[in-house]
Length: 636
Image (cartoon, rainbow, N blue to C red; front, side, top):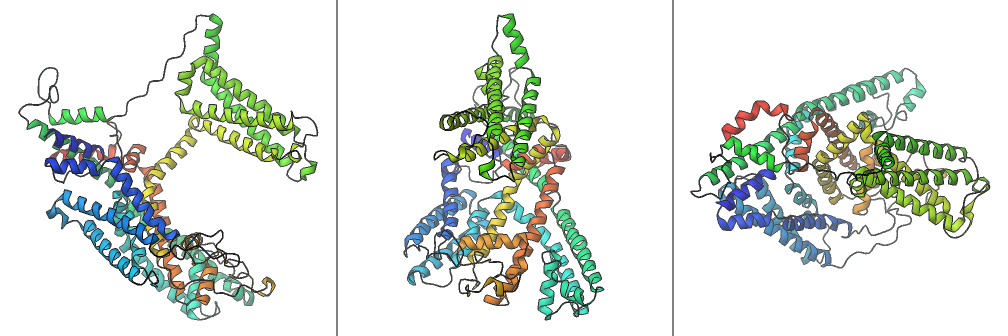
C-alpha cells in the first residue's frame, strides 16, 4: 500500500493517469518504465530511427546538394541501417508490450493509440523483411512514411495538439471549399486577364494569394490595359487581407481554450492521484508515524492532505548567502555604495555606451579599405571598457562576497564574459602590442586581430542582455517567448512529423536529371534555371527538408511549382500546394493562435502544461480554474 501511494504521488507530480495496474510486480515495472534511464533510451531510439533518413540511400552525406557540384554520396551497404532499424523495432516492441500490460487488457482495446502503435510496428517489420528479401533494392519503403508516428505517440502534448488540430479541420475544410469555389468563379470570369490554360491561371492566382508573384502575374494583362489592375488589386485585398485573416480568426476560435483545457485535464489528473494516495494511506490499519496525523493527533482530511502535497511540491525558495560583515567604517561605506542597485544601473549605462561607440566606429570604417583603417580607437575603447568591467566585477565581489556574487545568475553571466573578454584582450596585446595611432595589426602574424575584435564586440553585445530583467516591457517579451517555446514543442513536433512524412515519400521530383549546361543569359528571367535554384531538389532527405522549408516561406514558391511540374509531372503542383496548405496556412495560423492563447493565459498556466513538470501553481494564480474546484473534488 505504501508503494501504491508512492506511485500515485509520482503520477500526480508528473500529471499522469492513475488508470494502471497496482499490484506489487506491476508497480515495480511501472516505476522502472518511467525511470529516467528507460525514458532516455526510448527518446534516443526515436531520434536514431528518424535520423536514419539522412544516411539511407539516397544518402545526404555530401558537402552540397547542388547537382552541378555534388560528388557521389557514400551509401551504406545493405544490412547496416537495417540492423540499426531492427534494434529500434525491438525497443518499440518492448515499449508497446509494457504499456499494454500496465494499463490492462480491457483498457488496451479502448486505447486507439496503442492499437495504432502495434499496427505501425507490424507494417514496418513486414516492409523491413521485404526490403531484405530484395537486397535493399526496392523502389518504395513504406516504413519510412510511418517512422514519424513513433515520435507522435510518445508525446502526450503532441496528441493533445493533434486533437485540437483535428477539431479545427471541419471549419478549415469549409473555408477551403468556399475559397476554391471563389477561385473557380474568379478564374472563369476573368480568363482574359491571365494568359494560359485554366490550371495555369488557377495556379497563378493561388500563388498571388500569397503575394509571392506580385506584380509578375499582373504585368502581362496590365501592359495591355491599365484597367486590369483593378481586378488584381481587388483580388489581393479580398483574398490576402480578408479571406486569409478570416481563416486565422476561424482557427483561433476553434483553438481557443486549448491551453486552458490542458491545464484543467492536467490538474484533474494530479488531484485524482493525490486523492488516490490519500485513500490508500487512510485504509492502512497502522500508518507510519505522523504520516497522516497532525501534532494534535487528529487525522488529516483529504483537503488538508491536498494542501500538504502542494506545500511539499513547491520549489524551495533559494536563499542567497549573506554579505560579509566589515568592521571598518570605510569598508562599510564601500559595501553600501558598490552593493547598491544604482551601481548595477551604472554598469548598464556603460555597456550601452560601449555598444554605441563600437557601432559608430564600425559605421565610420564601413567604406574604407582594410589598408586604410586605423584600429587604434577601436582597440582603445575595447581596452577601456574591459578594464571597467573587470573593476566592476571586483568591486561587486568586495561588496557582496564571492559566494553571494556567484549565487546570482546575472553576476555569473557578467563575470564569465568579463573573464573571456580579458583573456582575448591580453592575447591581442601579446601578439600585436598595445594600440597606437596607425595601428593595423590585422596584417601581422597568423592570428587575425579583426576576427578577434569582432568576437570581443559580439560578447559585449551579449553582456548588454543583462538589462532585460530591469525593463518591464522587455522582461514581458522574454517571458512570453520562453513560455511560447515551452508550448511550441508539441507544434514543432507535429510539423516535424508532417515534414518527415512528406520528405520520406519522395515522388519522382528531382532536378538531377535536368540539363544544367544552360547559359544564364539565354534563360528566361525568374525561372528555376536562371535563379540557379539547383540545390533545391529532392535527391536526398536533407535537400528535401530545405526545399520544403523554402516552399513554406512562400517567397518565390511559384518557381518551384513551375520547375518541378516541368521536370517531373504537372501533378507535382498538387504536392506543393498541399504542403503550402499544411505548413504555411494551417500550421502558421495555429502558431498565431498559440501566441494569442499564451498571452491570454497566465505564465504559470503555460508553465504548468509546457514543462510537464514538477510544480503546482500557487493558490490564486489560476483564476480560470476556480469554477472547477468543486467539480474536481466531486469527481475524485
